[in-house]
Length: 170
Image (tube, rainbow, N blue to C red; front, side, top):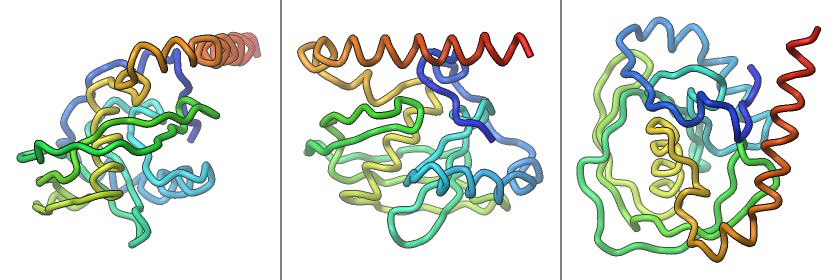
């Protein structure tokens, strides 16, 4: 699996709900391997070109597949924390996220789960959840930070476009 980079249109599409859980189970090992090989703590399906509502995450307690997630409650209190993204390589910035969230999701077998996530696990979940709606962490940055990163983001998009064009010529 290849991680899609900023500029790829699939990263900006709203993903569709999963109805065929066998499809998720069939790719789970390759999906997990891709996330770990890239040193990620999360990977959303759109990041590998699959426009479906699922992601994998590992907050240090092991890999978990999250399918058709919902955030059903969130704290009013927010906290700032540094984030990066496999689809925006080399860019790190502070992002404001809800301190805790209550979530409902299905696993790769379709079984429902409900959890209260706080701190780091909540941050990972919110970051990956955003991917399913075509939102990247850079969209949460204030204008001053975005301006400071503008050249770097432009360069990433240009390199992504060039790579796509060279692959298309093969």
